[in-house]
Length: 94
Image (tube, rainbow, N blue to C red; front, side, top):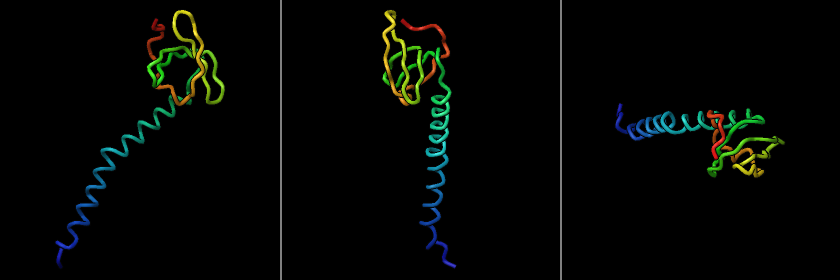
């Protein structure tokens, strides 16, 4: 048998396998964690938006959050997908 004819196919399959395990799978895990974090938001959580705004959730309604920002307690409405992270540090940043 001539195995050299199958060499490009085998190398392509190996490359796709490596690509999947090093790039695609970890990204899917991160996306799942972010989606779970956004679905578990609750009133009172200190958050950081993807735009860099720190705030405290004061109202949740479907995909819209109302957050309180700054010392003057300005209220902003943001989309749920705009939440980048929940601050474990419960003290508001001012």
